[in-house]
Amino acid sequence: MDAKRVTAAAAPVTAGTAAVLRERGRRQRRDRIERTVTLTSPIILLLVWEAVARLQLVDVRFFPRPSLVIVELYDLAVSGQLWQDLSVTLVRIVIGFVAGAFGGVVFGLVMGGSRWARAILGPIMASIYPIPKIAIFPLILLVFGLGETSKYITVAIAVFFLVLFPTITGVLGIPRIYIDAAANLNARGFDFYRRIAFPGALPSIFTGFRVGLGVALIIIVGVEFVGAAIRLALGETVPDEDLMPTQFTPVIQRYAFPDPGVVKSVSGAEAAKEVPGIAEVIVTAREGDVIPAAGDKRPSAAMVLATGESREDALKAANDALARIRIETA
Image (tube, rainbow, N blue to C red; front, side, top):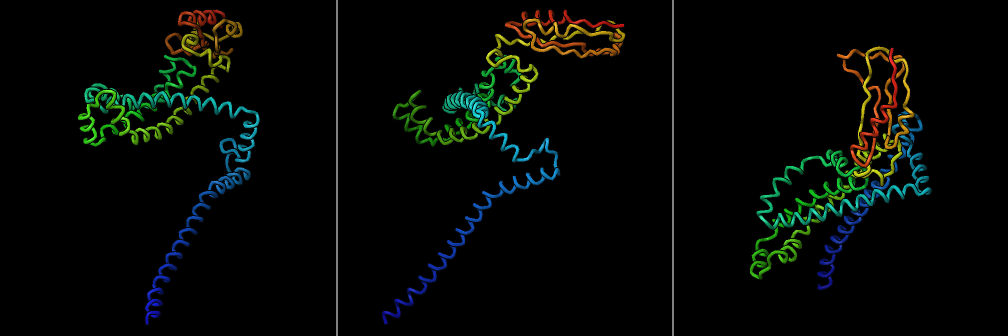
């Protein structure tokens, strides 16, 4: 009688265990399929891209074959150029991120723990925050020059705000009981920020770090695009260490067309380039060009980009270069 009861009781347990095992097996198979799809989908996309490019179904100038990209990437890695460029970018990100994150944490703790600080600094921070940080990069270039400092500052400004506001939120979200306990224990001033505000806001601070790091990568890409365009405009003639504000004061001067007529000859461009401090000379006038009347809007006949330790030096170099350009009309 007892044996029958044990067998009857064991049967449901065995059936339930089998059902659990079957469900676990289905989940494991589903997980394996998802992992396989996750790993193979990029490979399939690259293979389709390669096939489409080889069949000339897309313009390979804009959509080059992945195989060519891999070969070029390998060549850059072997030559060391890839690691050199990557290290420069990483240094810019790290320095800008650390500077911006440190400032964001400090100001965030102060503003979160002080009503007066929030009242004074809150409107200022809220008005500056919506401005796209890449949009103020030209202004930063004028102030700090084309060297590394301008890149560090642009990244730091972007990261600063993304860490500032989460830090403020984290401090304001600390339960009141901890603040009251700190007051009863006479933890004020620096002790309050060290023992209460900073530890309590850490989850929000790290959230700001995570978001700020991603934005720092986006900002540095845009900043380096602008820097590369400027270097192309200068013809790679001025090294980065010489592009600081004290040594790179850009001045663009334009050569106005003389009296109306037809351009007969243009000379002096090479002589203008020999003037110290001239980075670029662009002559737009060509023989046979018709010069409009004085009342019409005349295009520039020539432009020069001059550099110097001061604006006066750059302006003098630009005027000296323009004086060597001769445009005769008939």
